[in-house]
Image (cartoon, rainbow, N blue to C red; front, side, top):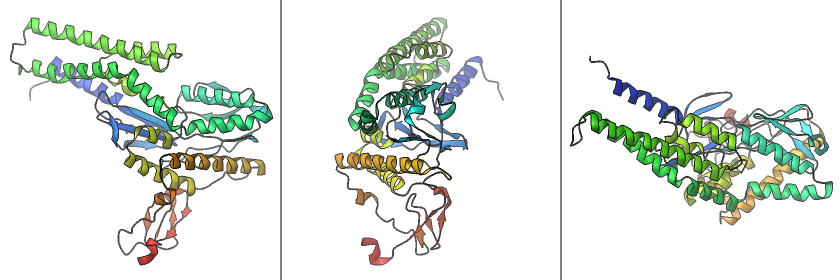
Length: 397
């Protein structure tokens, strides 16, 4: 067997590096929205490669103009009475992050701060976010709400909560990403074609001209020009989307110059933090087709109605129980308003599933897994009791 040439080894290394840029670490309680060939109209489901209790490794789509948005479930129950580090909801997720159930009064949150990915208040960890930017945003929001007086805080919390479900805001951010990354996606795609199809055809002599030294030098000159042009477009896109994050922009520039495979995936990287703490359903309403949105809405509504158990942490105060309950009710009101604005009837999303065969006796109302016994318990949903599967005319009632 003949050994690989230096050029072939270079292509193998570049391909491995490109594939590594497609890998995304998704933590418990987070959801990946993955585009397919540049569109979310028929987006693909995130492909889980492996995972553990700390998260899952999923695969983004292959095209250099695709993007993966990460939506992280908001980790705190918030009302004017205080904050509790527990939320029952885990929309679109098969697992729920570990939650401490600690509680804070608003006076205790006056000194809230972010340290890397952790948010601290009163010497305790409030939350460990998926990224430094999300931790900083959470700390800023809590600090702003804590600075309000008791009268204005209730309205400030209501406005903040509505903002998380604001479809117009999510749509604006989606449009901003499209506009800011247009030049980057075009140059990255052209650069990808030049590196792979053109380069491989040239190496093996399958183009209608000889691959002599002059042709090779011209190819390399265009390759480096395309590389640096793509890096420049990525710089401009980052400045447009995240103007205040100068240090992150310089970091992006430094690792973009280490390998041509890196800037090929930068439009994807620039979308990861785009939506911050916005609710997944608001993101879906902004980017998905109407059919896909209804599928997502059904999953979100089932989770809100029948959340993963336990619905509250053990051994907490009556005040904390009230905060969790009231925060959940307020979220459901925003969820109902969002669905109504999209002309979606909630009852149409909670229809009873059709049994796969006559042996099915019950189903989980949250995940719709079916069981062959009446008193089944769904371990995937934290031990939630299942519901009897209706038969015959009962299904239509």
